[in-house]
Length: 267
Image (tube, rainbow, N blue to C red; front, top):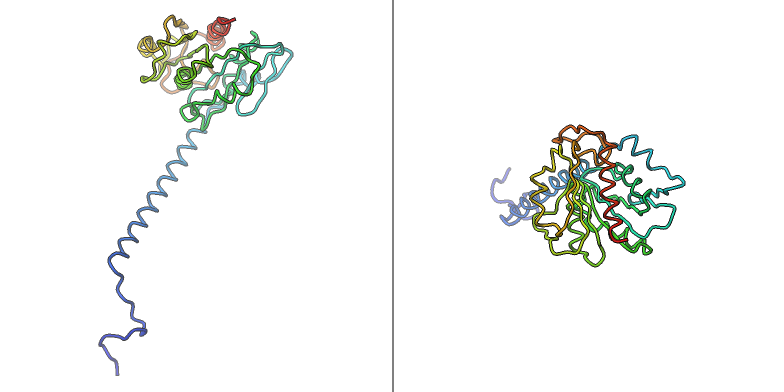
């Protein structure tokens, strides 16, 4: 005969879960869901940041050492003139740009007699590696004078580095770049130059003009007529940029001349 009444303990009947247990389970599932979303998002961001355009053939060729410049690969690229150098230049790459893409202008600056370091940045973003110049400077105690600079976002971060290290940095070179809104380098004793293309679709003339009050007094502003944003490096066209009306070689030679002037200023 079946007994439909209450079952005694141990009879196989499942006791109802207390309300607190159900709430904890819901919070646990919610927490795991958020964690999964964050992991997927961060993974997607990392893939996006590390998917850089390939350096052009000219840049690849400029990575070879010769009798004038030794090219050293490791956490970026160092371009060391074969004759002794007393001044160095740390060039922060633009966002999502392979440091090798700046090999041609970096090599030309080294051929003029200056050490050049183009660091490899965390996830190819200078904003995640603002102190990248530290390693370059520490690795070369024989260099007496340091200039920092960068292209696009890299230039903005280089300006911040110069502001934070006035006793270490004596010069600043911006390529299609300007300091962040919160930065103020106007009172610093820095040799500074801002180089920009007149057909730049990303760093506009208005951006450059708006940065004047945040840069050191006496900063040189060097327009490259017909130059655009992407041709400071060698990585192909860039979304939002305008076509240049001069060659990449012409644009980079002008950028190099302006940079070398800053490096020579303290000699």
